[in-house]
Image (cartoon, rainbow, N blue to C red; front, side, top):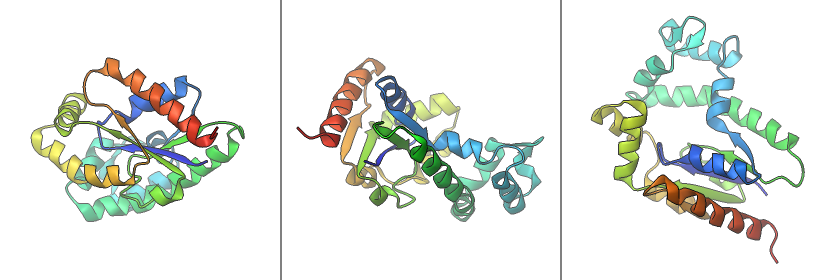
Length: 198
């Protein structure tokens, strides 16, 4: 069974995937893979520099802040970046999925699952959902962004309604962090019930 986990920016995908890993899931995180495929010396980084210029480098590393300023202000630039990185990330994720044990619960964490039109490629889609006001506050606090930057990042993603429409299961991450382990326990039981019906 192919399982994907997604959610809006600052919805709590990492917290949920960490808790799922603790419960035995094999987590394949697209954000981590996105860093791997643009590491120094990779074809991915070379393609980004070719498209966006040397100003997106800090030494031999990708300067994510510099690139972020470009792509969140320009939808065409963002699409160009996605055309470079998404195929590389998908290829690496498929390699890791094939390498997992046959009986493992493998969950691919894909922030832009809905935006990239990938939801239909999975048997089960889990969406981490949070109240938009709380999401904005987490984003401001975590990334040190101003109001305009927060709204640019939110506007670059699918709407909450579109994500929820793609969901087979939803994890509610609104409210205090202490609630989340119980929500993930319920999710973990549902995943097992769906994988192995009685």
